Length: 78
Image (cartoon, rainbow, N blue to C red):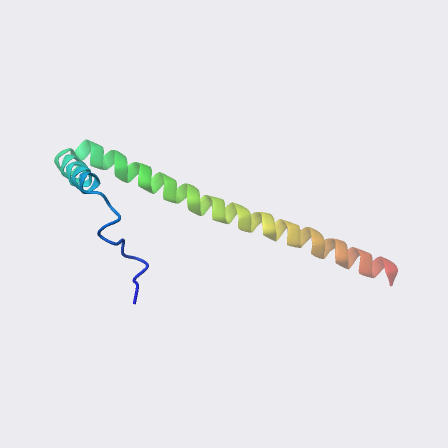
């Protein structure tokens, strides 16, 4: 059975694996870089959540407009 969350070993070249290890060591040894990466990660997650809420508000306002229009039309035709 194939696990979709795990990358096969032969897909990632060896030099990339070495570079990833170097980057991890550099981040662990530099707390300022780690703080910047954490800050960017939190900021992008907040932007993502804000985008989801913004789309939800758009959908809610469109539903409000459609509902108000429907009720207005219903009571004027009646």
